[in-house]
Length: 401
Ligand code: FDA
Image (cartoon, rainbow, N blue to C red; front, side):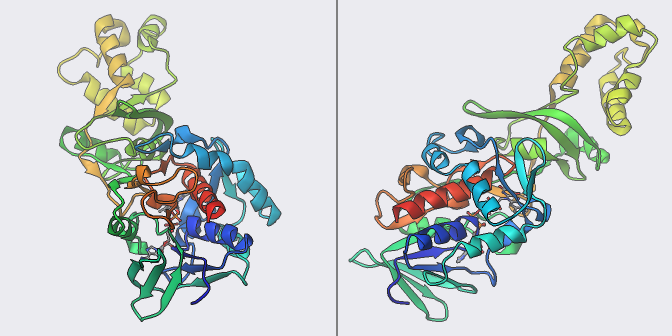
């Protein structure tokens, strides 16, 4: 193709959005996609209804080696801007919980909207392109060559090929390889928003597969630590559910995960119960507040090691009850790992933000080269934050092209 202003690699959330924005500014865009259709992850997102943004999306909801990097782009394209776009296209939406916005209908509407936003005389989408080589000439122009010999040339190239999570959908480390080819550093990628696996003593909890309960879950150390109050789910491999997916992004191999069962309970609730209902058993109290199977598993473990906690509360010592309260408030699990990229909703890490301008997403050392979306070392929480980053980084890039 001749007369192209920008080549965008990847027609996912970030690439499609950036292509539309650049096209509307009159730029001629070649949008190249490996899959046979665009926006595949959008289509499966949010259980098919696409959690397209979060009302509260701000820099604090993202992990990155540089927590300030996302600020500029997020400020210049906000959830309100995306909502306005969704409404312009007549797409009905609702808030499910915690500021998470979903389509009333289907995620297909978001893909259709993004395609609609691409002016056909400016944006050419080509699917099924297997990229064999990307080169930059002495004149600074980029040439993309496909395995079948087709070529595209332009003075600007945008990497929007996402991260390696869900490889069975064709996701790969292509973005990182390309970035490294141009001398850009990559922050070690790792699966994020991913279930954790349990082994050792914790393995017994796997018997609770299918049981869920609201918890406060915490993980991480130093600046990269976080806690979330949401549901946790026991699985046949370990732990999942929103609270666990959220902390998985902060968790590192070898570190414990802390779970507060009954996060709303007063700090002295067992001593109060001993006073108010001395004939009751700990197991009964737990069963009143938690699913029976979980209550029994916790009661069994608390009462083990010859403690008196199998007795009526009135016969338990205050010391034992305080210790049980403390353990329920900070139950330590030692995950053996994660379920990996096969189950990870996103990839943390990626193209180092230190290599990019936070205003434009352009590589500082390679003029004309840009990176946006999940390929970059900016990872959002669960709940629409990752799409908001795709829109905001795509917008920042398109404005600068
Ligand atoms: P994205 O992965 O969307 O797009 C990359 C594109 O590049 C793909 O189309 C891919 O085929 C293409 N590509 C890859 N290699 C290529 C190559 N070599 N050449 C050409 N093209 C290539 N987030 C959220 O905010 N709300 C939600 O509801 C969900 N739900 C959700 C569910 C599931 C199951 C998953 C796996 C993920 C989510 N996410 C999410 C995360 C969200 O989908 C993700 O963060 C964004 O899609 C990232 O957008 P990108 O455009 O960066 O990558």
